[in-house]
Amino acid sequence: MTRTLAIVGAGRAGSALGRRLRKLGWRIGPVITRSEATARAAVRAIGGGQPHAALTRHVLDSGLVLVATPDGAIGEVAGALARLGGEEWRGKIVLHTSGALGSSALEPLAKLGAATGSLHPLQTFSGKSVPALEGVVFTVEGQPAALRAARQIARALGGIPVQIEPGRKPAYHAACAFASGHALALAEAATRILVSLGFTRKQAVRALLPLLRQTLGNSELLGPGAAWTGPLARGDYGTIALHTTALAAFPAEYLQAYAALSRLGARVLGQDSEAMLRALDAVFRKAGVHEMGELR
Image 1 (cartoon, one colour):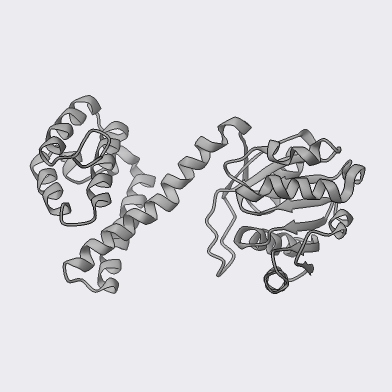
Image 2: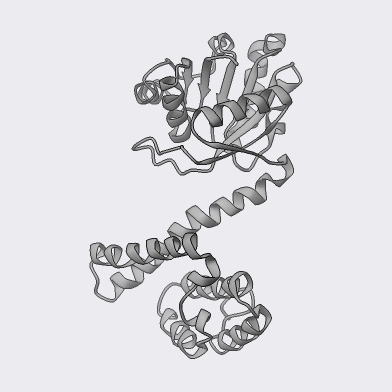
């Protein structure tokens, strides 16, 4: 497999992957972002490459191109890359890093003979440091040559490649959002509730993070059913009613989310989910919350 890499869209994920691959011996070619300043910053973060503020024919000097732009820009970038090279794309490999889109987003390049695919690390990138990728799942798909390259990159980074059908990627990415972004929103909402009660933010975080860590640790060790605690797990609907009353003092989304998440917990964790859902509906109707979590 080629060891020369061009990166288009070297933000958090692109820079982190580029840095790790450079340390593995890859030669980094063009590093392309929206401005000269961000391109230079990305090159510094990666430790190699040539900064560019726009797409350039220099990208054709690389055997593999990693498109790490936001999802909405991938199709546009693919079209622009296709216009740069024409038949020169034949035999090259182009991968994008979207978790929600399949390799069809790179169709303009596939039509010119490039092998196209996707490589999505199931990891969060803060932009402040390069996260550990050992043991991380990388979902991969695409044309045979691109799929082989994606698998080889994932394994070289210490990850675990898992092939996924392109049409199933939106559901896969929704699962990632549940476990990452939405989980963070829940933790932040809980933090703000405690702050409203007189906790300092530091105290609230110190109170909640050990609880979150222990819950996840218990789930990993014992399984989600055994790790599940709280009033819903105990069938304590009186306490849930008290929660709904208290949450009415907060922005509407708090109670809506509490109701929706309670129903979700009953569905995925409850041993008799239908009975739990009926009991919850009775509690939430009294609180003025409709079945889908909307307030009257």
